[in-house]
Every structure is written in structure tokens, then in C-alpha cells.
Image (cartoon, rainbow, N blue to C red; front, side):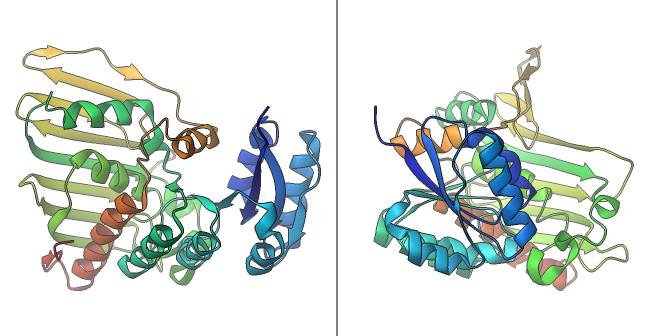
Length: 335
């Protein structure tokens, strides 16, 4: 039997604790170390590992100390911290020569994405961003079929996502711009933007955007109109206030077909000509570590690559710039 892959965790919050319950039971994984600035979060994650029958991982309050002390005892690091810390922490992991599984969104700016790409290319490590949609079998299949030309040319994209996010996260770090990197569009809306970036198979060329904070310190509602380099047009709407719940609908209009899918890859509907195929459904991933390991082994396409993260970052920077200028179009420089 091959040696277990040794895992370190940066950020021991609720998402890490949720995943740890299954990861600690995986025969391929050995929890080695964790880092978090909050003692109670560290203790909670340790308790989850022990309850799963795994040894207690080493605990650090500083991720840099964890990387320095455990570098030779680690193979993989999972980063699950507030968005604004991703760039620095992810780059440090890549520079340490460790494979990285990074919570979404990858980074908050294009500059951070470029630094991470440089570190990844120098070290040659695997970097995957943990978007459920990007790892969904329905999204991956749609991407393959679109690239093969089955649906024809992409003409337009219409995407929307909504959630009772404003009240759900009132007072939460997600509504503190200095550590969240944005509001609803950059948090839940990131799932929509990433799935669009992945399936569009094109960078964006020009973006016009409006935001409304609805009394909060971050955006609650966002409307985007854009043109892609392949000529397709796109509209994206994010509404972070409303009745309880969360949902997304993205429609890709091709010259030969119409594909409807949600941001997380939970369902898909395809219309070809006058024929509407039955809705397909897939379970939204509860243990994406299996997908990460498949990507690491080379048996699955890396749909959460640093290059895809850069496409996302270019779109997000353009949305912020345009919204700050009251919708003035922003042209995205060619890669």
C-alpha cells in the first residue's frame, strides 16, 4: 500500500471542520498539522479528527510557523481562511513546494493571482481551487462537449444567483470588506462567476457593472453586462437579499443548443433544436478531496487551475473598477 498523503490545514473554521469529518477517515490521508489564530477553532478541528479515529494533528497559531516546522512532514495543504488572506497564504504554500487545495475564491485581485501563478510555475506544485461547480461531473461534461463543438458557437450567457445573504451573514466577516474582499457577488456569487468563466472557454474583454450595498459595508446586489473575447455577450445578476433560500440559474445560448445549469453543477438541462432533454441531477460535492487527489494524480482535468483563477480575477477586478465608476465600461487587457 502506498504511503498516506500528509495533510496540513490553514484555517480551522467551520468549512474545514465539516470536511475533516470525512477526510480523517480517508485511507489516503493523514492529518499532520493545522494552523488557526483562534484556539477554539483549533481545538474543534482536533476533536473532529480524534472522533474520526485519527491521531490529533499538531496545532499552531501561525501558519508560517506550521510551514517552517512541518515542511518536510507535509505533502498537501488545504487553505480555508477569509478571502483576503488567500493570496499570501497560497503563495507561501506554493513557495514551500507543497501541493495546495484552496478554498474559493482563489485570490481577491489579479496581482495576487499573478504572484501565485509565478510561485506555482517555479515550484511545479499542484494548485486546485475548491469550487464545487468546477469539480461537478455535469459542469465538466458540459465543458468537454462545448470544447468538442457539439453545441456550436457560444452566442450569449445569462446568469443569476440569489440568497438571503444580507441577513444570513449580518455581522459576519464576510460583510467586513477588509477581509472579505467583496460582498455577495464575491462570496456566493463567486460560484456563478467561476462556472461562467469555466464554461465560456474565453477570457472577458469588456465589463460594465453596478453595485448596491443596501445599507451594508459590502455589495448586496450586483448587475454585470460584458463582452467576451470570443464575441459572446453575458449578463450576470447577483441578489443577496430576499426570502430564505439560495439558488442559481445560468443559461448558455449556443448556435445549436441551449444549456441551462446551476452554479454548483447540481442540475443541467439541454435543449437541442425543438427537443428538451430531461433534467439531469448530480449530488453537489460533499468531499472534494477525492477530486483533488484525482487531479493531483493526473486522472482528472484541473478545472480549478491557477490559470482559471486568473481569468476569474480579471473579471472580478473589472467588475469592481466599473462599479466604482458607476458603470463605466472597463476593458480587460489581453493576457
